[in-house]
Length: 132
Image (cartoon, rainbow, N blue to C red):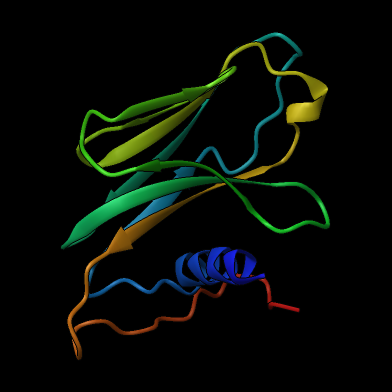
């Protein structure tokens, strides 16, 4: 239960835009349709003042997000079966080799930043869905 709450808080953090100043996280493409067997790449770009890590999540309909990868240093690359994530200086990519129908899901990236008291603020994300 504690891990689920922690995961939910990280996603909430991303959705609410808990980033200081002009910090931004953007993911592309927002939607994607492919043919079975084609390779695909999802991209996450970020501009943050104090980067401390990036996570990729998978969320199936009606379920909570599931952590796929944690990346901390530029050049980090992690792979699990057909999924591979790479961390670059200002972004990350998630590659899925030969996708199958069971790979259909929402994929999310989240960026960790370091804050000191008084330097981070919550900014509402008008595109975020309300939590239930």
